[in-house]
Amino acid sequence: MVVTRRSFFFGSLALPALAAKATKKKAEAQRPGILLILADELPAFMLGSYGNKQVLTPNLDLLAQMGMRFSNHFACAPAVEAGRNTLLTGCTPMQLGDTGKLSAADVPLSKILGNAGYACQEGDAKAAIPFLDGQTAGKPFFFLMNCPTLRPPYDDVPQPFVDLYAAEPFDGYAPDLPAAGAADGRDMLRNILGNVKKAAATVSYVDDTVKQVLAKLRSKGLADSTLVVFTASTGALWGRHGLWESANASDPPNMFDEAVATPMIWSWPGHIPAIAHSPELVSAYDFVPSICDLLGLEVPPRNLCGRSYVPLAEVKELPKKAPRRLGIFAHMGNTDMSRENRYKLVSRNDGKGPNELYDLVTDPTERQNQAENPQFLTVHTELAGILDTWKKDYSTATPVAQEAPAKGKGKSKKKKSKA
Image (tube, rainbow, N blue to C red; front, top):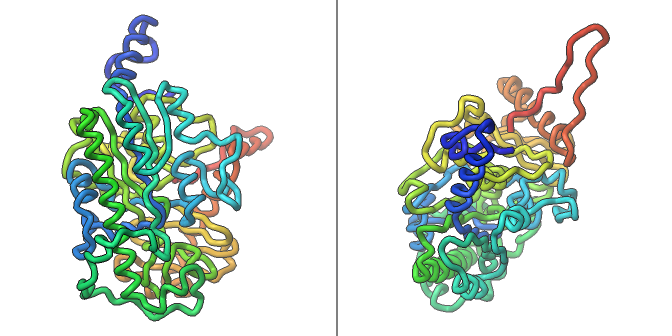
């Protein structure tokens, strides 16, 4: 059973049954509706709240001002389907399999919330409007809103949004020359600036659809009782490093920050502090444990590596037993990533290479590969070690078996990675 701060404050697991039931009812009465707005291939650097001064995202910027913005949130699988399913289950890409698809054994967030009495539905903004019309305060709901596609060729963007950027020079946007290993989206590199304008128009179109749904939430009187979360399944490069889409923009797959860094915004008036910002490293695999923690629900009995970041969202100190995270991980095909605040290791073919190692303090744009630099050998070895442990511990849905104790000695436990 997950013991939340709320249940700990009102009583302990040793309380009489009557008091425990009262606590459970109170927790259920305070459970918010949840509107999860999910985009595909939207890099964090394209939003105003993440520092962009040229792309217009006023509604998402306002949402960030009304709550918590996580500035270091990363996809665990920089590919659309696997990225979405890691977010919605907490499972690692290895546990989901090469395709990233859900199996009958996987427990997505909609099932967790449905079992807790939530009315659950998925759809686009057009479907969200009538769904919200049917909701009332005090009745928990979960709506997964899929944003308009942000993948090329951007043909479905209404003309008014295209016109927004007709005269925008995008001063300072200096894309690289097309990379030799460019793959998905390679055709977009023939006219990078023109296609960046199209991508920007699509982002503004997404922003406008968010505006419509949030307006409906307010008109129904649900704004104060709803947790709104905005995030993306994966990022995209859009000309940076001479690449366009996400990890599959190159061969072999890349793990540049533009491909794995995604926006994560939480807003719940009266519960999540406004104008808040967290620089802590958090991952998509933390989302399901976080929602379960917030609602006082049990985490699915799966071998999940994530942990709740609700204390960060509420601007509270982390529990002593769960100190500040040291690193996060990602996986796709033959490519893995181990990333901490300063260093990032991209390991391919189980360390055989080609590998990349970056010092993100002195080289934030990831231009100087230090993987073969002997001065970085200690860092390389350390990051490779914890990456290997993470992959071994979280490649299956069931925990790795504990090592048998040596004869005549005490029990020996396998050390788990601090994901």
